[in-house]
Length: 102
Image 1: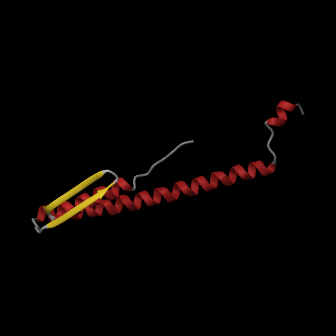
Image 2 (image 1 turned 90 degrees about the horizontal axis):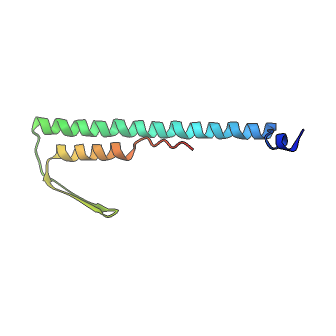
Image 3 (image 1 turned 180 degrees about the vertical axis):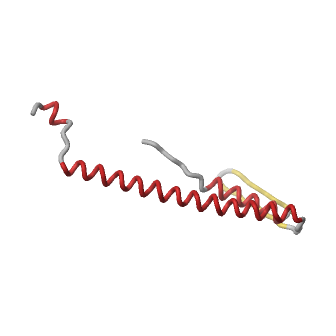
């Protein structure tokens, strides 16, 4: 066999290693998809509960302040429905499925 062909030849060990990498990547992708679906369902439930509270006219007073990473968020005397909707939105955006192809 010529030197050029030896460079591209694979033995059984290399093939098994490639198959193991594929299995690991597939498992990681499936786990991330499950995490994203759980976040989507949970966030949607929070947002729907907040919308229901808002539509039903359930009122109250909720104060919320969040600081971090160079931003500040403040909700003063807001309704519980608005707070639940905002929390649902944060959960959905925070658990989005992020696919990276290499």
